[in-house]
Structure formats: structure tokens, C-alpha cells
Length: 416
Length: 187
Image (cartoon, rainbow over all chains, first blue to last red; front, side, top):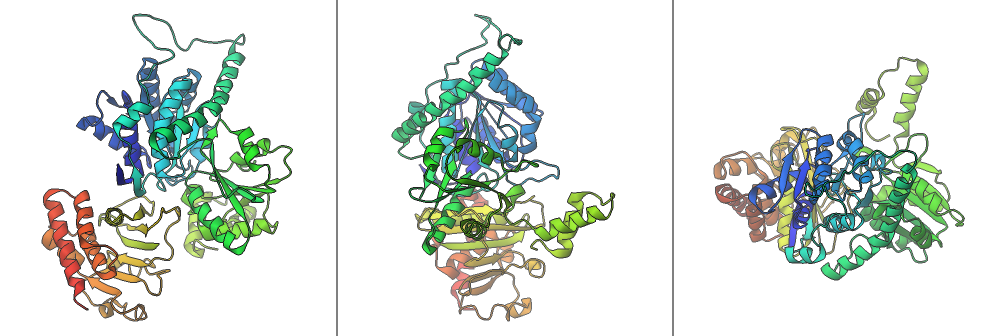
């Protein structure tokens, strides 16, 4: 059914259609509307046979999901930003134990300085935790990926994180197709756990493993991720057969055929980017877009194949690894070893800074002229940075950076 | 694509207004995208929300810098926030006030806009009369439909009732209707 609906509420509806048996979550901006709606559906009976468990923290939220999943219940939680950090130990436990929990991450920056707005720092902090990580480009995809995520998680017995951009997607009202229950039931079979804690047939889950088998446990976790590279395209195809639309898969390509320059990105940024490259194309240059829907496992071989004709690859990413550069870029450089192209990194949209089509176009024009640095910060206010650096050079006690920069904005304005 | 930027203060339903606008457009079979200027929502703080309306799917996800219409829900923002920044020369302006453009000090700034594209509506008063609360958003949407002709009033009414049930919905629809009728009369 077509609805004009907020992204968060649509995701909650998708989760409810998947018939979870346990939902436990702790509210945090910008994820709050999702779990509020989930709670409402349980209370009103729209979602039957499900327990909504109130917990006192994110650590408890995921720990409850771990317990519920180990007992054989289809389990769901959601978080963002500092909430994900607070549950970090449990994030590793969920994947280490191979429990098919689905978690939404309403992507938000990580403090300090505290910032409630969108970027991908939170997701990147857990990129090596052994979860399958999917990124939604639109709210329709966010909704659809949740339905796919339960099937994927349960087929592989591996937790899946569905990332959607905080505010930009979570709080946007759009026209979305909400599937009906019968279609979701046909697509998503009941949960049959690979392992289950059952008093009638007791065994333990989570044994201590020493050096004799730890490497093999981890190898199998890696192997499971590689299996996902085969399963995700299958799930993408069967989803299309059931629901009649494209959602998910490993990545999306746009105007890549014959384009010497390709921009690689993740999440909602891809929409603005597609508009930007369409405008550029009117001036002549052909620029393609690849948006990753699957970030973990990293589809190395498939990306290499998709990008083998590109001469310039520009990764636009919403997180920075201080002292190193772009996180997605590092993975991509590995994938493109031996391909005759260069990879540039553009850091954009940190802490909610709008990524605009004009900014992207002007960055791409520079890239096409070969003027882009290996690591470029989109719309960086250089004057603001230089003034702080000069304060720091003047003396040791230059004061707190965040507060200094806010004063700088008050004096000089936000634009340099 | 038609782009609307709404300015107001926390508690005035600025975000809800953009959402209702998108629902009204959806009901007419169009694509619409409504979103807030993502911030910490506090009562009284300046709030901005946006709505894009198009006949094809909307991919763009940047804030609206060059609106086709600006709705100002609170005139105390006029000196504090550049509400008309980027407004298209043939765009539309709706201001919530019982004063005239001249009294608001806007007459010169907006005198190049086309005839009938700039209207002042006493939306807060209409809301107090019909809803019992000073929430001007629904009334301004009624006026928006009247001034721009972009949406049928029936769609605005259905969008209001989607968000507000029962007596509150009725009151908001009455306020919207009064504003719609108000702008039908040339200023």
C-alpha cells in the first residue's frame, strides 16, 4: 500500500511485518521514532506475539536481544551514535555467538563534541565487529532492507545492521510502498534457529575458546561474511520476484557504463550525487555513481569488476579516520589493486553539514581537471581552521577547540 | 519541482506543517518530500522545515536554498533569520500576522514579487478562534493552497485530518478553510 510516511515509522512497520518476537531498545536521537512506533505497535496489538522490553541502556538492549535470540526468538533492536558505542561489547558478542539479530542504526556522528546530526562515524566504529552491514539509499530501501535483513541474518545465523542516515532519512516524509503481511510472510519463513537454548535439551552457547581453536572460529566468521556475498544477491533477486522492485543487493550503479570517472558513496548521499552528475553531464563530462548497499562484507571482487574501466574513482564518504583518511577508500583501494586508476577521498557531510549538489559539482569539476588532493574535505572552512591553528601556535593554553570554533563562527560567520 | 521553506518557532507545528503539505501533495498523486532542518527541537527556538513537490521521484536531499515559496509562521523571526534568502523572483510568500506588509516593514523588500504572490494571513488568530490554541500551521496551509493554486483545498483538508483526529482536526480544517477563503479575496 502506498503511503506518505516518515522513514522511521515506515521502518517500524516493516519490522512489525517481519513478526519479531522480542524488541528491546533504548531511545536515542535520531532513532527514537522507530522504537516509539515499535512500542506503539506492540501496545495496540498491531504487532502480535511480541514482547517489547524496556531496558536501562543500550548495553542492556543488545544483551537482551542476545538472550532472546539464543532462546530462539526473532529479535530486533535499534540505536545510533553513542548508543552503539555503549553496546560495543555486546555488538561483538552477538556476531561472535552467531546470533541473527537485526539492528537499525540511525546514523549519527560520535562526540565529543556532542553532535546529534548525521554522518557514518558510528557505523564505521563497528565495521570490523563481524556484523553484516547494509546501507539504505532511500527510505523505500531502508524499509525493504529490514525485510531482507531478517531473512539474511537467519539464513547465515549472523547479525545484520541496517544503516539509514539519521534525520535525512529517519525524519523524512516520503511516498513509500508498504508491503502487505501475506507478501512478507511468503518471503520470510518462520525463524528456525541454528542453535537454541532449550531446557529440554540443554547445551551451552558461548564457551571459552583458547589458542587451539580461536583462529578457526574467526576464520569461520570471515567465511560467513564471504558466504553473504553470494546470499545477498540471491535475496535481492527473490525480493524483486516477491515485491516487484529493486532494493538492496551489493551495490547500485548509475551511469557507470563508459564513464571514465566514477564516484563511490554510501547511503542517502547517492540521491543528491545522481542529480549532480546529471547536471554535469549536460556540460559534457560523464561521471557515474556507485552506491554501496552492502559495506560488510565488502564486495571487493564485484566492485573491481564494476570499476575496471574507470580511470578516476572518487570516494565521497561521511566519516574520517583521523591520521589515515577515508575508511571506505581504504577498502576500495584494496579492491582496485592493479587497476589503472587513481582513488581520491572526499570527506563530506560530517556532523550533519549539508552535502549540496552545487558543492559536489564544483568538487567534481576540480577532480576532472586533476586538481583534487588525495584527501579532500568538502566545504571545509579553511579560514576557521587556520585561525585556530594560529591560536594554538601562539601558546599552549589556547583553550578548548570546540568552544574556540563556536566563538569563531559568531565573529566570522559560518561561511569563510 | 516546487520547493517550500517554512520558518517558525519550536511548538508552532512547523515540522508538522511540512509533513501535512507533503501528504496533501501525495493525495494528488504527486511525489513529495518533507523534512525538518534537523536540530534540537526546543520550544521557542527558530525552526525550519522543507517540502519538495514534483511529478517524478525526488532524489535530492539537500536543504532548500532557493524556495519557490516561503511560509513565515512567526514574524518575530523577521529581524533574526534571513527567511527570504534565495526566494525565487516569481515565488510566493505567506506571512502569519494581522499587520500589513508595510507595518511589518516588508513592503519594500517584497515589492518586486508578482501581484497576489505575497499575502499576510492572521493564522494565529484563526487558530485561536477555531482550534483554541495559537498553532498557525494548518491555517497557513489553507492559505498556501489558495495563493499558489498548487493543491486543492480538499487535499489540504484530508492531510490535516490525517494528522489531527476528531475535534482538533475539525478545528484545524475550519481555520484552514477560513484562511483559504481569506486569500481568495484580493488584498
